[in-house]
Length: 76
Image (cartoon, rainbow, N blue to C red; front, side, top):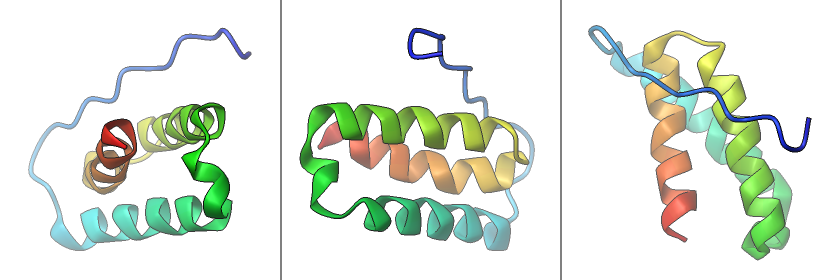
């Protein structure tokens, strides 16, 4: 599972802003729960993978909000 490739996160269709904000809120809470450990590369990489898998399983509107947080983590 550790070497399992991440699914591609594809955002399509019109975005429902409320659902997008809900996805972003979920992802931010997920990251906050990790605390300062998110600064460590292996933790950040696993968080990105977990959020990506979660986002793929949800509607594009929710996934769009989660992707915003994933993008911030990748830039960190």
